Length: 330
Picture (cartoon, rainbow, N blue to C red):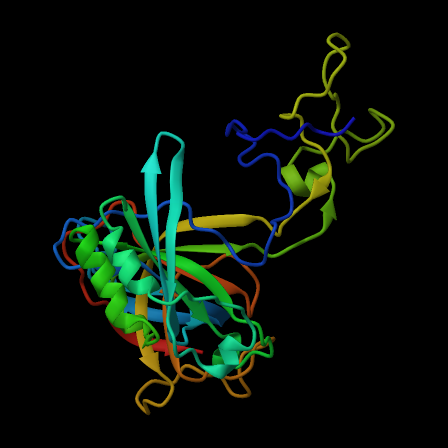
């Protein structure tokens, strides 16, 4: 009998369970930070994973053993083409949750995006949406990014929602209204030295046994019939297998969100001072062209996969310090 699937699994020593395949190649962001400012801002952007580099920098963290010393750390290169603001979505809220009240889309959408998606915009939708702002509790920007802008072959764009925070609902609505049909770059949302959260689909590893999938210890040689299986699935009575028992199954291709990834470098390949491409380009990706960022540490997912970037939701610092980069080894 296989492990039972639960809608809200307990997270104990076995971490995430059940570990099923993600429904889509695109990760979903379910929680958003709230900004305590009067100026509304869009809280998300995205990029495509290109490869890894080594960053030589000075540790600027206070009260750490390596403060002021030279550090060599891993950096992940993300190609971040501009995202297009397709529309505005307003949500009302009751005790059942959020409900979409209106969708307003831009009129002049580029052909390479318009031919891949279908958007219906009713006449006077923008004016009607402005009159219904009293019911609205949250404003989201509907954005689209084209993988071809990052040098990939995929034609169909990714379309997702990005929360808007800061100020009141009317200011948020007007802020997105001014950006309708325009492209926004990564430096309009984040800055060098700031920290972001990344959401992506991890690298798929197919069907794996309990040793590889859960880290179960192998049994002693000749102690049982098998070595790479669990010793017991549970008691004789009740005759059932609990979901907490490690079982073989899908490993990888799960949705994961990693917190507090610092932006070490933000630039454009047209700048002669920044060399981010190795000779011949990155393996499985090629040459990075256009806007890019380098995040400190690793990022879930394989190369060319969509990585969503969200403004930091935990432990947001009061001040953003620009990192002191000495060298980038590609």
